[in-house]
Amino acid sequence: RPLVGVLALQGDVREHEHALRDGGADVVKVRRPEELERLDGLVLPGGESTAIDKLARTFGVAGPLKERIAKGLPVYGSCAGMILLADRLADPATDLSGAPQQTFGGIDMLVRRNAFGRQVDSFEADLDIPSVDAVDPGNPLPVRTVFIRAPWVESVGEGVDVLASVPVTYRHAHEAAEHGAGDAQPDAGGVEAGGVARIVAVRSGNLLATSFHPEVTGERRIHRLFIQIIRGEA
Ligand code: GLN
Image 1 (cartoon, rainbow, N blue to C red):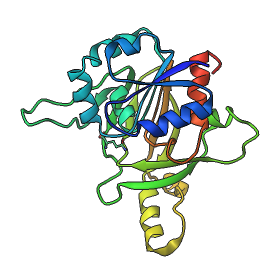
Image 2 (tube, rainbow, N blue to C red):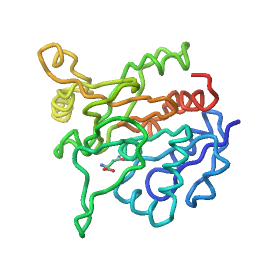
Image 3 (cartoon, rainbow, N blue to C red):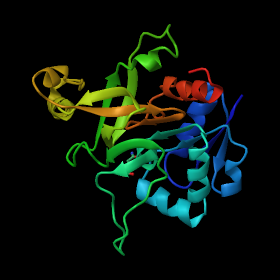
């Protein structure tokens, strides 16, 4: 079993630990730079990217982690973790001194934080993600995902594979659902009618990032895909 760390400075660390163990990895929490050394892979959890950034710099993990990423350490980031893997942010937060938040980087992409709007901070979606289906061809179910104050990817560079997108009209569907119209579903017609699909899952070499949290739904195929990446099987 590969040894996978979960960066445990802030965020939904336990949910990722469970998902990784279910998926076939041994798991350790990571807080200190020396704990990075023996890892086969690392998860950056969902949470608050500004807090994780600050703590990672305070604990001296940020610099060594950037180096490990540059040397090819497989890393999966969900939500805040996606933000932390972005080379560029569309709207970095600034602290009281006016300094912008930083990322570890690694994926050539521009990410916008809290992109799905203020009124609707959270929604669930069933997504068809072919590269994730391939992890478990016997499982016909779409990928159940949760978006919580989620970022989206506005653009990607060469070498970044887009794994999944959702139409931005999704949140309108969600609002309808809140008013009793049933479970929200992505409104693909919105794209056909000229709406914009936003990227919510990407892979760049050994780096994987999702806007959403698969770890809170019982979905395990994203974590299994990540473990396959670590093993060199995907
Ligand atoms: N909006 C958060 C941030 O900027 C991410 C939210 C999440 O991880 N659920 O870090």
